Image (cartoon, rainbow, N blue to C red; front, side, top):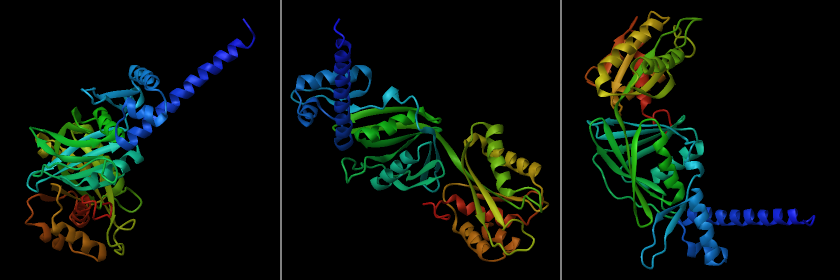
Length: 383
């Protein structure tokens, strides 16, 4: 064998790889812009024979790099999309679940994601789509989508300047809900497809209509509970923010089928001599199944009672997604000046969805109540 033959074969192999990369890059770009590609369009964009491009498409189909989303019909060519490699073996989606507030006519979906970029993309696209979406915001690793229960309507998604994904509405069942979404293009389709790997998702079904994908994402439904805690520490011992994190984790450990949503800290009026560390109260939000509503209140009380270091600890509970104005008012006053315990309790005494309990004392009622207002992301400037 001539000395140079091995090198020639290697170069030839390298050129094949390069050609494959060139075609795959063109596929990705075409899917990014149009949402799909056809063999004819790809051949035209690359200025290559259709037969050559068709061979590459068959290779990519065989290896799972692309997917046929619409077969050829008559004169209409087959349409393809670029898939995430390895069938999305590593999904950025960790948890997806929902709370529903029937009285307020609202639902909120929580999507915990390890990708900041993906969350930012989703938040912007969902917010721009309108439909039943009221608000889309990011809190820590969680995307929160608030939507109306009563509204189901078509949303416009497509090429820029239209959003790539939107929510049409919800179908509620017994402890479950179908989130009905509409997506356009490979990126949106891939992100929603990745949701099936998240804890809390019970299943995803898809249908294709024209250039759009319609999906139903089935997930568990819970009730939203906010828990405010204050005055759990003493000089040199304990921290309310740390106890609140323990509370959230311990509830998950004891009950199992509850989902932590958020942990927040809010500073109240700092110039109060008897308060420690700048006068901060804490809030945790959790999703609770209907069957565990009574138990979670009892367990939360017991956990705080067992761990507090103070003789002035109180705890407050609030069910639902809407924060009453009376609760927001308590926070507003408590941030500006000293407020009496009686005044704070009188402000909310008519609210049936708010419960305030003395654990070791009543002084913590003020901060516990005020912290409840922070379950609304707008209060902390997060939305």
